[in-house]
Each structure stands twice: as C-alpha cells, then as structure tokens.
Image (cartoon, rainbow, N blue to C red; front, side):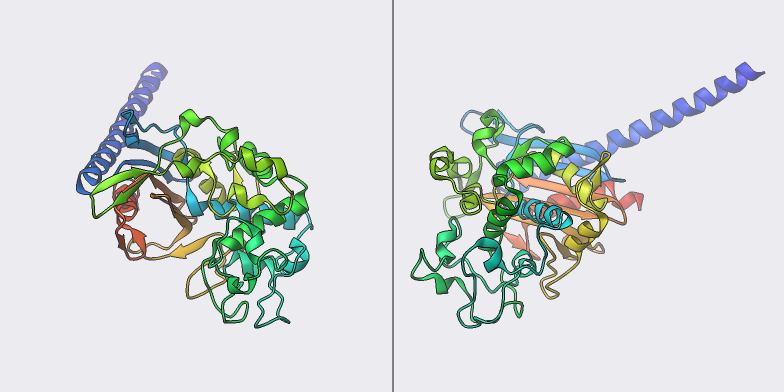
Length: 386
C-alpha cells in the first residue's frame, strides 16, 4: 500500500515538473520570438537581456552582433560599457563609506575634494555630497567632465561656467561631472583607486565579472559598440568606448584623477551580472548571502530627492516605462550604446536590457528599442503571473 502511495506522489510530482518545464520553455520561446521581432522592426546591432522574477534571474538571452565586421555573435558572457547605470555603483560605494563614518551626505564638497567647489553666484551656500548625488548641486557639464580641472579654480580660468544660475539644491540638472567628483572623493576617503575599490567592495563580494578599468579586463569579452546614423541608415563603430587609459596612469593622483575611469559611466559588465547587482538593490543591499550596504542605505538611495525628476541617489523612479508599474533603476546612453536597469522591489521583478547599437528614437523618455524590449519581456514573464 505504501509503495503505491509513493508511486502516485512521484507521478504527480513528475507531471508537475513536466508542466512547469513546458511553461518555462513556452515563456522562453515567446521572449526569443519577441526579441527577434524587435531586431527586424528596428535597426539594432545587438541586444543582451536578463529578466528577474522572485529576485532570481529566470531568463538571459543575447541576440545580434558582437562584432559586425568579424561576424561574431553576442553571447551572455559578453560585457558592455553600460554608461550612466554606472552612477549607481558610485553611489553604492559612497553609502559604504558613510556606514564606516568616513563621509556624510551633508559633507561640504569643497572640504571633501580639497579645492573650492562653490557656485560663484551663491558663494555662501555649501554644495553637499547629497546635492551632487541627486544632481541638485547647480553644477553643469558645459566645460566638460573628463577632468576635475574644469571646475578647479586654480586650473581653469573659466571654472565659473561650470555652474548654473540657480542656487545649489534649488533646481535639478543631470550632470556627469557630479559623479566624476564623487569618484575622486571615494578614492580620497577609502585610500583605494576608484576602479580597485569598486571591484574589491562591490563586484567581488557579489561574484560579478566587470569593472571600470578596461586594461584589467579580457578584451575578448568586450561587445563592440556602434552609433546609428539615421541619415545614412548605417552603424559606425565607437572604439573610444573601450579606450585604454594605461598612458594616463603614469601621473595618477589618488583623489583627483578618478575621472579617467569614468565613475559617471564607465562600468563594463554583462547583462546577466548587472541583473544580479540589481537584485542586491531590490533586496535592500543583500544578494546571495553577501550584504553590500545596509537596508537603511539601500532605502536612502531609492528615496526621491528631486521630486519633479523622480531622482534619488544614483537611482530614479518611473511610471513611464511599463504601464501600471512603478519601477526603480537607471538608464544609460553613450557612444551609441543604450542600456536600462529597472526593478520593482515589492513584486520582486526587474529587467536589464543593453543594446550595443540601435535606433536613436525616444518614447516617453526612453529609447524606443529599450522600452519595447522591456515591455515584451514583462508581457512574457511577469504580466500573466500577476
């Protein structure tokens, strides 16, 4: 009698496993077909995606060209320069240093960086670390952002042009220089070079492959990036996306030269590993048994500082990506690449989508290819299950 009972239980479990496996295969097929359709509908060099459900990566796929000239196909292990999603790594590092009581969000940037950072129209108004991380510093990129010399009064006679006409914390302007300043501050207070710090304290504990230093990574894994020209209907390679900085290292100054690694946009990582990093933020600082930042710090990053723009500290909120959903994350665009990382922490789902070259059109504030890809993945894996 007991043998028959065990047999029945086994058969039921087997049937359930087959049903679940068939359902998963069906979802994968729908998603694969959707990606192929997008590749046909728009000019797209390549797409690499990852879907998170119940805070686990349930789907990862890469389609299109890694190198169009060599006719090399993209794979899930290929890495991309992800552009401004990189800002969240810098903000995460800042929160780690705050937890160690080495920094505070209210710290004066002038005191932190070692030279005067003051809007000349409001010289008595300190610019704080929180203002820099939330793009409310009144600093702009008009003089460039690849060197701190542009805002250093002793280096650039036009330093004052790096500031807007409004007072710090009274307005918002998205600014890459904010986060290159942040990278230098991370160096100064950690005592470690920026790229080394991020690898040691964020990537390695999470078991992720990537980094800001192109010379420390396997170039065979770099996905070439292409810029699409609508006039000629052609893609053009952007080799500067992975330009070596080895020559710049000879005169490197900790706490000042960090912009050569682009803390504002220079992280190189795969879509799958970026999804695992995203899960860490979705789970308020913890992934796979490793706590990267405290719950309080993770919540603070996700808390809106600039209400109109819905920007927090290296992360933003949007209701314009998927109808009916409020998501947290960041986008990126540089050299022709477009990227997005967005998650819903309460419902435990999220998406990473990276294109190494695609149509440059926008809809509701998002690249059309990235937006449509995320919506198709949402329909395939999340919508029907809710």
